[in-house]
Amino acid sequence: VVGLLALCVFGYTAYMQRQQVRAAVWPILQFDSSNEPDIHFTLANKGVGPAIIKNVVVRVDDQPVKTWYEVLDKILGPGKHQGSESNMNGHVLSAGESMTVFTPHTEANDPVTIDKSNPLWMQLNKERGRVTVEICYASTLGEYWILRAGGLAPSVTISTRRCSKPSAINFEQ
Image 1 (spheres, rainbow, N blue to C red):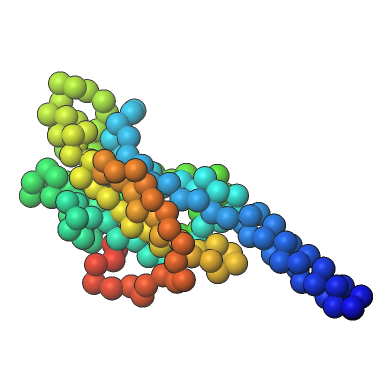
Image 2: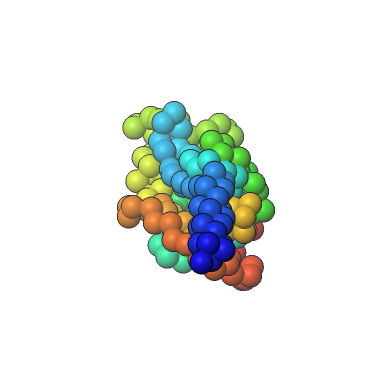
């Protein structure tokens, strides 16, 4: 009886230690767009452990796009669009790290800063809500989550068994 009780205590202790380790490496991704000081899209890890990004799908009006320039084509119309971008696919975001993933630029190749008299700023500010993301990421323990964010709806993060394999709709940057 004592041996069985000791085994149960050992099992419970191991379970609790695993839960503490999980909590110590839990990443929480947040995707957002902003208009100050310029129009930009950011990805941040608000959790306590690194987030290993496995795959990304970016959509405009629920239609997948491959690049940020395709995003701009859909929200501004066809043309030669400029911007600065950072690669999300395969990136590891440390706890507390934030990165600007895309900043649209003017024809002069400057960020589109807040200026309500500028039609480009007005259109980008209005239309950035049409952009949504689905990002599958993992912790260092091999646990997986999917972040669905952007647009006008609140962000949702769900646990998943694994990330899907890259497909034709995956974002290329």
